[in-house]
Every structure is written in structure tokens, then in C-alpha cells.
Amino acid sequence: MRALSIAFLTVLIGPAAKLSSDTAQAFDNYVRLAEVQMQRNPALVWHEDEKARVRNGELVVFSERLNGDAPQMKIPGGLIHDWTGAIFIPRGTIAEARALLQDYEHYKEIYAPDVIDSHLVSHNGDEFRVFLRLKEKQIVTVVYNSQYDVVYAQPDATHMTLASRSTRIAEVSDPGRSMTAEDPVGQDDGFLWRLNTYWRFEQTDGGVYAECRAISLSRGLPFGFGWLRGFIQQFPRQSMMNTLNATKRSIAARAAG
Image (cartoon, rainbow, N blue to C red; front, side, top):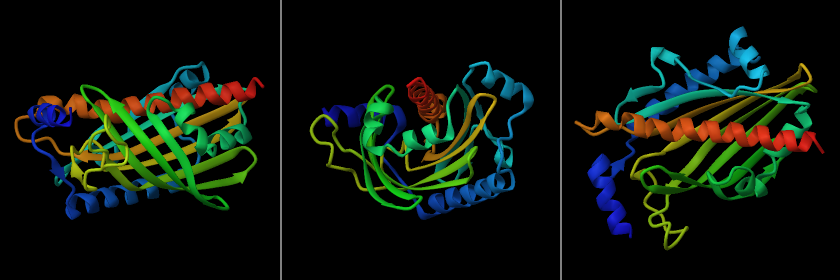
């Protein structure tokens, strides 16, 4: 099965990719600029029409345009994907949002089928270290063992932020046989090399507004495979939508008691 998957992927996107130090550094530089941007605008900053759509129950997903590129930015050897999504949860509270997002042992249930295993590695105050096993199924099924450092901040009773930064992402070699056998980190099919997620919450208008921004890194497209851009782009966008829908559904259920 693994041999067939490798052959199929080779036809689709070429041979396995390798994450270079230049690619990793370019991603880190992009993230640094994005985090400065977010620090300068700590409040939810949607346009009024977007906020009205969210308030009326719509899930709004849009691409960021840092440095003028969206939703992907070419860097040496890779592509940066930068998406933001927003939801409103009527009757939701900051306390319920915090309790849900820190319930790491149950992410595999809350965020199924994208998360198939999860647990808390360690915890110190507002800092958490978390393990997530991610599953993405498009043309083929790809599974990742990933770890994140997560930091929460709650300046007052009606606002909360968190930053989740990946520290290790390894592709599972053959999910049909073993979930622990991995390809070397950064030497795999290249669909996901980095993933940083930033949440901002505001409790107002009888509920909670939530904004999620995900910045991820994948391999670049081999020469002649530009037609696959939509396929590689679909991974982070669909994951964003699934995460927002699951978060809204779970917080709403808690709010309903």
C-alpha cells in the first residue's frame, strides 16, 4: 500500500521534498512580521460588513495579504499559506472558549476527523505543550504526528488570545500499518512542514466572536505542476473551515448546558 501511495504521489507532485534551512528561515521571517502586525492590532479588526455577516451566523474565511500576496506566498523551496476565519457563537463566553480549547485530551473527538489523536504533554500556567495527530484526506490520506507550544493571554474578562506554534511535524510513513513510524522530519511529501495558529476572542453582543489565523508552510510546486496549486491550497483552507465549525459547534453546546 505504501509503495502504491508513493508511486501515486510521485506522479502527482514529483519526488519527496526536503525542507531547507533557507525555506525554514523565510517562513520564520514571515511569521515574525505577521506577529508584529497582530501585536499592533490586538483587537478584532474585521471590516464592518464582515463582522455583520459573522454576527448573522456566517462563517467568514479570507486570505491575508501580508506583503501583497494571497493566499500563498512563494519562498525559496516552499509556499506559505495564510488564512483567517471568523465566527460568532451566540450565548458563548470566554470561559467556555478557554475550557474547550484547553481540553486537549478530547481534541480527537472535538476536531475529528482532522485530529485522530491528541494529548497534553506538559502544562505550566498559561503555557501548554500539546501533541496532535493530524489526518488530511484529499486524493490520498496523509497523517502527521505534530507538537505545539501554546500560550494563552487573557487581559480581561471579555478578551482572550492564544498563539500555537508548531515545534515538530513528522509525516507518518504508512498510516495503514503504523502511526508511529515516520519519515525524517522535513523529508517527506511536503504538504505540511510548519503550522502556527493564532486565536482572538471577544465576548460582546450576547455571545463570543472568534478569529482564527493559520499560517502554514508546504513544499513548493515542481516545475510544470502549477495546475496543482489549488490542491495544495485546499489543505489549509479546508482545515481552517473544519476547525471553526467544530469550535462553534462545541462552544454552542457548552453554552446550551
